[in-house]
Length: 426
Image (cartoon, rainbow, N blue to C red):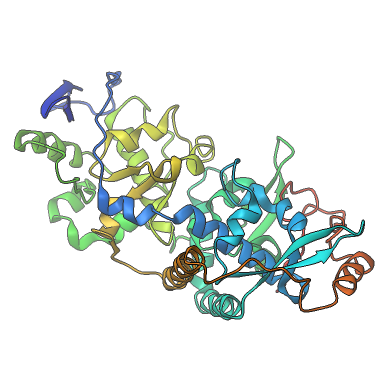
């Protein structure tokens, strides 16, 4: 077997991994370390552009929607900064002021009598958020199935809550899924204490009907012989200019003919140094990306899945070794992995209803940013439309968390170390 990649000035180099007729695919060998050339894909980069700000803004919308009058002072919003993924050198108030079509600014007095910025949702943003809640309700079965399948990919059907938090935006989970979703499905999920003393989410029962991968569902794309031999092939596509020559496609064809191991099957018998094991790793991430609503996630979000998914060291190298299946975008100073087959240029082929909601939020943000740069929005110079003393004193006396964190019940939820300090509405 020879791996071929575009390296240097348009030259194609390869290295042998021993794929030949009659080769024992379980035989051990070592892959040669080689630096692969990354080729920019402008269409998929455009999909990622603005994603960081959109995710942060939508999370802030969810936080504000749970607050009294949909309004919170900046010092309370700052407690959630760790969940927003914004650059460390960017002030949260600066970010929020960029999007006046989403957030309206006023001022309130804190308990010390200091005037501080306070932000609330605009009517348009609030209405769109309510539409989003309706979409989530209408697609709840699909959402629960995605979460079940994610847990079924793991060895023990358990993941730490922090790991799920990293993926919740991509899975389409509500920001406050711990409060709003999990308690409603006590027959499916349970909170458990992990050996490292963290709190995890466990799937209580296995569902054979869900244990079918997307590649197995796409049987129409496979040949009868491949189905008989369980040699399912992944859809492949390359960036224009990648320079993969015809003879290199021969290697790819042979690799595709290797046995396919379902990501939901026990793979403990596979030697991690073999090509069959690597195809299994590709299959696991192929399925994981299909569980996300936009078939992508940041690379760092999967970096801690090695043990839960029973993967070898440096497992994320498959993203570089299989550029026809995955694309690594380097937009927004991070690495986002995209499943190529899910997109036709910039258009996602299978659109989840939440994608439409997010695109409408993105349009509102662009309009607000553009109008503000034109001077159509002036910095607010008044103290809110309600009595600021009443607002501050009400939260201070009512325990709504503007001056201190909310007291939590003494249970597993309270031990979950998260920035989400406020209770989310049902």
